[in-house]
Image 1 (cartoon, rainbow, N blue to C red):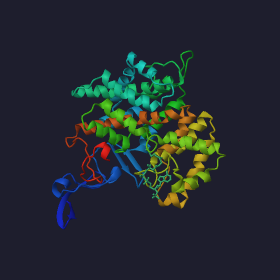
Image 2: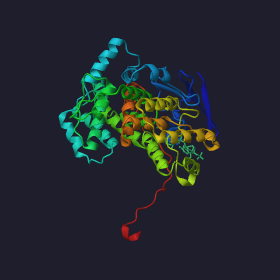
Image 3: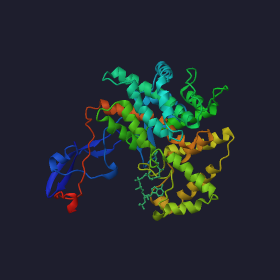
Image 4: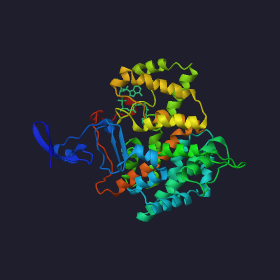
Amino acid sequence: MTTAKLILNGQEYEFPVMVGSEHEVAIDFTKLRAQTGAIAYDPGYGNTGSCESEITFIDGEAGILRYRGYPIEQLAEKSSFVEVCYLLVYNKLPTAAELAAFEQKLTYHTLLHEDMKKFFESFPGTAHPMAIMSATAISLSAYYPEFLDPEIIDLNIVRLLAKFKTIAAYAYKRSIGQAYIYPRNDLSYTEDFLHMMFAVRTEPYEVPEVLSRALDLLLILHADHEQNCSASTVRMVGSSQANLFASVAAGVSALWGPLHGGANQAVIEMLEKIHADGGDYKKYMNMAKDRDSGFRLMGFGHRVYKNFDPRAQILKKAADDVLGALGVSDPLLEIAKNLEEIALNDSYFVERKLYPNVDFYSGIIYRAMGIPTDMFTVMFALGRLPGWIAQWKEMRNDPATRINRPRQIYTGATERDYLPVDQR
Ligand code: ACO
């Protein structure tokens, strides 16, 4: 076994080295503090491996993304979102019979308890749907308490996958003041979601195939991304043995931020602003390069991808295809392409290895599909759900899991005496 040596205050310590199946190397510092008294300082955890995982492999330099070993390009072209859910959660591609049984389960667990409709009504009409998603996801634990029985956990996984899209569609209907549309058992996962979003009670609604296909693609591309902010949050909350619904609700909250899943909403708002400002994208490009402006080019840059984001490449092409098929011409797509082109040739972006990420083009497709901007991050959550579940399940089954509890370097005041208020 290879080891790594560390010299601290003149004393030498040895630590085991781990190598992953794709030759990723880590120094095992589990005993660092016990042996040396020191801790590892790594804000943002950019150099910290928090677990061993068999779910997703990313090579940020080479632009590789694989779920359970299968390249994202192949899954995007040939698979369906439900099949990818199965793959992530159960670690194998299903047989035809397994897939049919899984589809059946995801279809028959879509209804929400009727009482839950009151939750949606108690939020103000202006509520952001991500707030409703997080609150409603955790409230499922009140209806489906979790017992340690693996069969109940598995049933709760199915319930969550099935009901999450109903919650998402109800949150939208609530925000526009329309009656909820109940799920339909004769529709596929993506068709059913679009039907609950866009049907109205007074008219029949046929889900256009171009929309359900585009949604399948978008959800597949978002399904997992190893130890990102929201997945790590799910694992961290779950490490205290909090239940699945509570852990996933925390993941929804983590995803909401504009530096993570909230970026797809922020991208469209940025493109709209540039458009309203006469389309002068060069001005915004210069602002993005000026640190003092506080402006960032949303949808650009990634903690892991330093060459290209394979999901963004697939989505750039899909944006052209979907908008073409829908007969939509969107000036924001032109602005996005222009921004991308100058950024890819600008030394500021090239030197910092900043490339379009998955959020740069997804919002343009969602917009063309008729999905409102403040639902974009909800769409991301819908796609990421199987990844969170797979990460939670793996964490739960891993004997190495301990409650997540980082340390700190304290830099505050040293001991001092309390003074009564009249003596301060
Ligand atoms: N526009 C302009 N400059 C940028 C951008 C950007 N979008 N992103 C990074 N930079 C610059 C930083 O100012 C920094 O410059 P410096 O070296 O001169 O200080 C350098 O590039 C490195 O940036 P960091 O913030 O240190 O990179 P980090 O890995 O911490 O952040 C992040 C990654 C959060 C994605 C960042 O690139 C960003 O804020 N992008 C915009 C938001 C976004 O699109 N988020 C979605 C991420 S993908 C996802 O969650 C699905």
